[in-house]
Image (cartoon, rainbow, N blue to C red; front, side):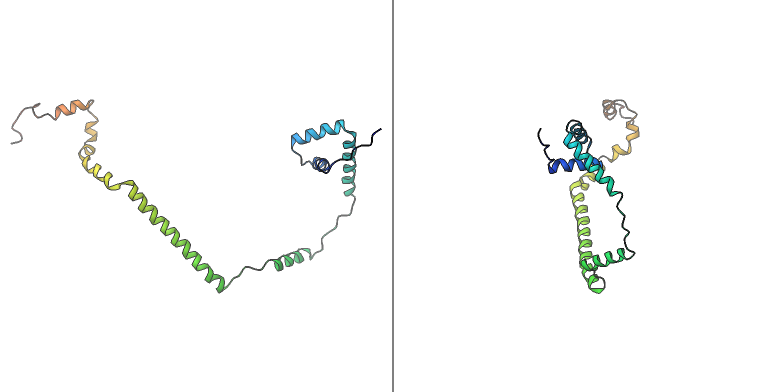
Length: 165
């Protein structure tokens, strides 16, 4: 009879994660299948489970009332307090001014760029050139055909009534 092969560190880690409910579904199914066919793995799982169950019988230590205070004081000695006062304020002003200048510069650049790229002058010239059409748009909508409007503009259509003189 052969002696059972001990579990590797990775196998034991997976088994511990399985018992803690930390494995994903696929890995858990694979480990359950292995537990069903490998008595050595099953025995290791049962031993780990019994060990975890015994941990519940150990006394639960209560932290001392000064535990929080001692911990916070040790942390504060490791990390220096933030500087406040006139020195810290003097260092803050140049940074704030740099940010404000950057924002103003970006806004001015954006406005100048959009004005330059939009070609606002060309748009205004087109609107002025087409002002007569824009003003009479509702009248032009009544006509079905552009050729009809051109024929109405022909000077010989109505003849000379003498109204213009």
